[in-house]
Each structure stands twice: as structure tokens, then as C-alpha cells.
Image (cartoon, rainbow, N blue to C red; front, side):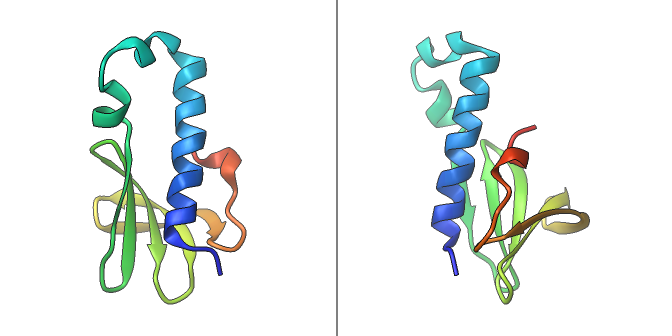
Length: 95
């Protein structure tokens, strides 16, 4: 099974590429990407949250490794399925 950290790194790379394409000048602003667009992992009992910047983006079911979107922070959205940690779908990681 893949790890949450591997998944977070894939999200980070996909998001940076998306931002670079959308607004290349943001990289020139000191610490913008580090402060506003950094991917963080917040483990929990049932779910692990993967946030981009200050917004929740994904929730991973700890027992199965399934990746879902977030309906509201801390509430899983079962209608937005992004694969599993073994087989995530990186093309859907950005907005």
C-alpha cells in the first residue's frame, strides 16, 4: 500500500505544476508557495486529512486507503472518489 506521505507529495507536485501554469509570477513572491499552497497531512482516528494551503482538499480512509474529497472540513464526500493510496488518480488533484 502507498503511504499518505507519498500521496501528499504527488498532490504537492501536481498543485505546483498547476499554479506554475496558471500564474507563473506567484513563484517570484517570497514564501507564497510555502505559506499559501503547501500540502499538509493531518492524521485522525478514522480519516487522515490532506490540506492544500489552509483549505481541506482530500480525506483518506485510514482502514482502506480510499481517497475522497471533502464536503465540509472533517466531513467526507463519498461522491468525489479519487482512487486509493495504491492507485491514486493524479489528473484530478488540482481544481
